[in-house]
Length: 179
Image (cartoon, rainbow, N blue to C red; front, side, top):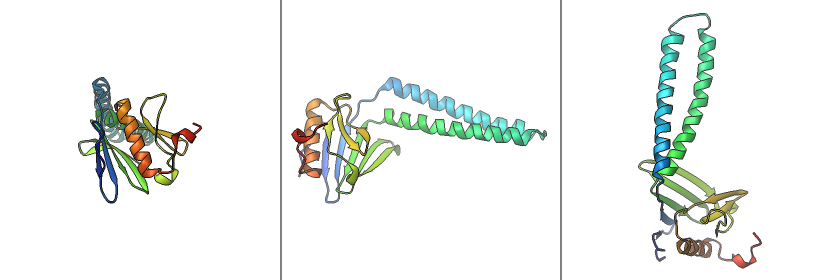
């Protein structure tokens, strides 16, 4: 049985290890992205109403071409909305949950029933370490650096890294690592 590390809760189950880490919300960014979502939703609804009422129902010769242009524009705005929605979820979460076993690592930032979820195959994961730039636990997934536990204290981060490396990278020695 693993012991909790400061504010970090560790739940050891036969099929996975669940690590729950607290996150301090940045209320300014939550408000900014909330306003951005409201503006985005109003714009999309207005464009759909305009498309149906003023373009399609008008019956003009150019209506089909204009409708296609507006649909392409709406598709681009849908993509922008997904990006804003993901950023809002990132900043609105109050905790970060990591599920890890020998095959997969899942990183989740839940917001009610929504939230960001990222999954990583353990065969492409390198051992955990503290990022010098962001001062938080990090792991390399292929060539991508993945940061988590951003609001952990230095002691909590080091203890968590030692625990995870001991469980999932038992032969790893940080003194032998060149990076």
